[in-house]
Image 1 (cartoon, rainbow, N blue to C red):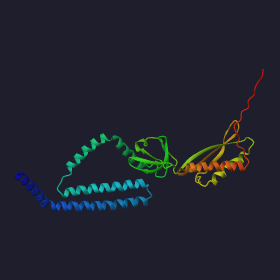
Image 2 (spheres, rainbow, N blue to C red; image 1 turned 180 degrees about the horizontal axis):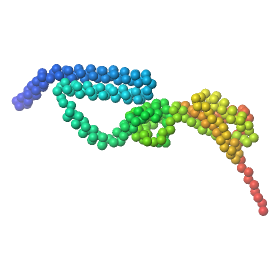
Image 3 (cartoon, rainbow, N blue to C red; image 1 turned 90 degrees about the horizontal axis):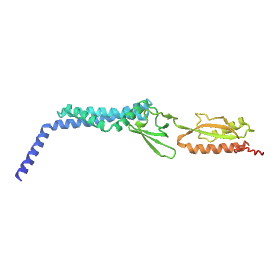
Length: 273
């Protein structure tokens, strides 16, 4: 029991001496660290607003602001350790060794972060664009260092690791998606009139993109009809809704204009002896 009391007293005395000798250094380190974190936050917000003013992409702006804040905090932490009389050289060596081991253990994760940094800097797409990559299509909702988040009209969220994007062929149609349709009309119909009717019907739907004009023309000469090709752009967030509405408007307009949509026909001849 006496030994335990002596040990407790020794520990208490050691702690007391430590705070007596280093209290001002500890207080100074805490003050420096607190001021540094505060200043880092202010500078980070200023950098973010500056990037927005320069009309940089929001993802790139956030990345730059976060990087600036991290660098300032690390510098302040080094200064705070110096206030305590602690040399940062051993810490740098330990961090380097740990980084090497972590890098070997997390190659996949690091490759995602490296690819994410590439995406943020080169900006092959931004939030709001419609992309198709690795057989997946959707509208970009969020861009992170490790992954991007896509969403379709049904609000199905698709997460793609960034390492599966860099080095692949990316189709970027921005905010719209291309819709392609084919309508067959009879050979005795007025093709010019049919093309005009279809074009006007598309514009009446309201949600078809006006920046990219619809293309309507003769696509093919089939066995039983002249096929009219239709290509028009639709906002990705209302793709199927607008496409179905456009198809209904096209059918109704062709019927009102007395333009026949023929059914497939085959002529069969029986040859006798």
